[in-house]
Image 1 (tube, one colour):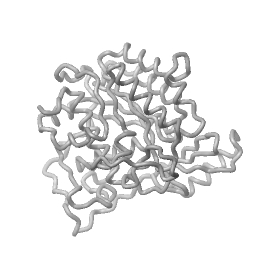
Image 2 (cartoon, rainbow, N blue to C red):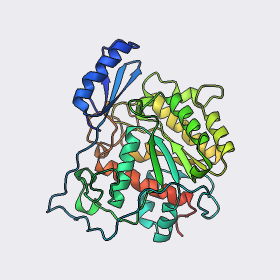
Image 3 (cartoon, rainbow, N blue to C red):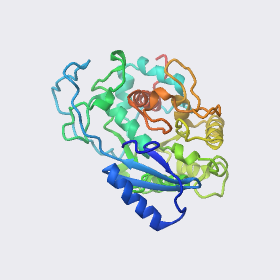
Image 4 (cartoon, rainbow, N blue to C red):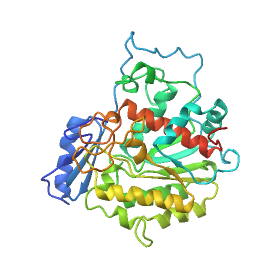
Length: 357
């Protein structure tokens, strides 16, 4: 993915809303710059153009610190999840992974890491989810989708202080399946479609594809000004609402459902997004759900300092230190690392680890 114009997700104003011809022409034009798939999403303010580029591997300079170790063995290919989920300790009750939980990553014992790695997970996402997946690969220092899976790309460590660069092959995420909401060029459909696509995906799994946990996330583009997500998602009877997820949980007791708040950006945000996130936190707490509070993680620095939007509205926003974009919400090396750490804490908790053990 690559920043084009305003951000990697770019707001293109002045186009004829609802015009299929305009969308097609705009898509073709942006593809010449993106060198990859292009997703054009219509919102009231215009067109959101998302570039999904494949980065070119760049070797780490010889003087870089630390130098990736020479592998002594080739990790096995991504195994298909077994028909029967792993059998960790009794599932923990609902819990929240927020910015304060990221620090627990440094306390994870090897036994908890091994249990977390044994969990099979399904996670559906758009471009920021791909950033998180990249962060998990960087943490393991293995890149199965690249021609040379042992060539560490510069984006893993770009901008990090030497003490922030960490990786270890023990962080094996090979059982954690990350998928776009739908195939290109529709990786980022409307928010209600994200719900129905996820529900259909889980319901269509074969017995040999049972996952220990599953989840999906809304993107920051779903919280644009005027979006109805903050109200309609939590009201029964709407297309793609919380009741659909509750029914999915009831139909698949073997799979733990992970709820997510909505990701944030620097300026592409709104009161609607803030309201949705607060309502999701209240819902998860009241119903004993597992919640990955990505909004809280993204809007706090590692030392706990809160971050706000760059338009002076006082809205919680993605910290400037977590992105290289002026207004967008895609993650840089530090942002990816924070979310990768949070994901490991989440999965360790799902596998039965309790902080302090």
